[in-house]
Image (cartoon, rainbow, N blue to C red; front, side):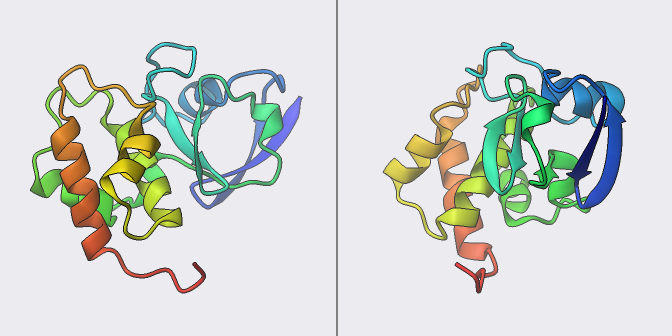
Length: 157
């Protein structure tokens, strides 16, 4: 079945069954490898992307449910790596092994898109579904605060 999507600001059509997880469409059909397969149950957050500006677990999101909502992956967040979250991540040396980091960054970017200056508890709530085997949670929180300070205000919010 042909499904039309807008991924990273590019309109595309994929031939996929509507129940196929978005993660497999991104990785296998569109060759966007930044989103990772972790648990397959939506519990670890390694597969997190934004759909319509909200963080979603792409491993449990059927591609047929996306509709016209734009999909943003780590590759489309800022191809130059200049999104405030990406800059803060690098400045604070957040990643260790790096496996979960694309999902962490996408969850953080979605949070900041809706909450310009989140509190520690808002950060903890938004990031609670993203697991990090290396335990970099303190640096993740610090990076989100730094990104919030350096982000350009969104005039529509």
